[in-house]
Image (cartoon, rainbow, N blue to C red; front, top):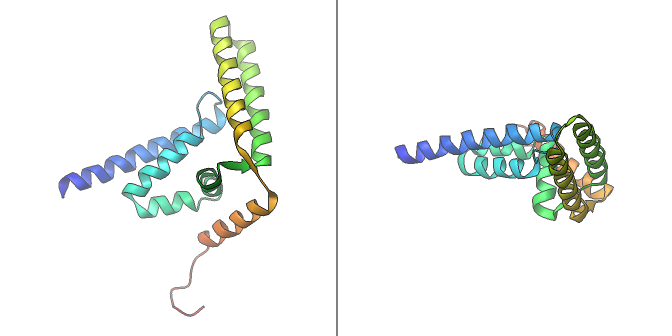
Length: 148
């Protein structure tokens, strides 16, 4: 029993660290967002139903994780934003970096992320609206009674 409790808390801690790294990865192009968000959902699924539900019904990350896990797809708007943010921050970093090795490393990271994004399917507006409706309804309070 004690071992299960320790395992639960370790999953919660690992999930929270992964979530923090995933959120940080939105702003730092060298740090990948998607793998950390997927790891966070995995850890929360095995440790806390409430935290898993919170993450999967999150206004921003919920539909992103669901569409990535289910369809290996992201919205066109997200792809375009990722390309713009990725390359603008990488180019600024490459200009500021004195080392040619680090510039080359950043270029390889940028190309790798770009290839990954290009290989992902692009979700249609209708599919995104359906996901938004599905996740939007999860975030609203449900009535306590059985009557609807």
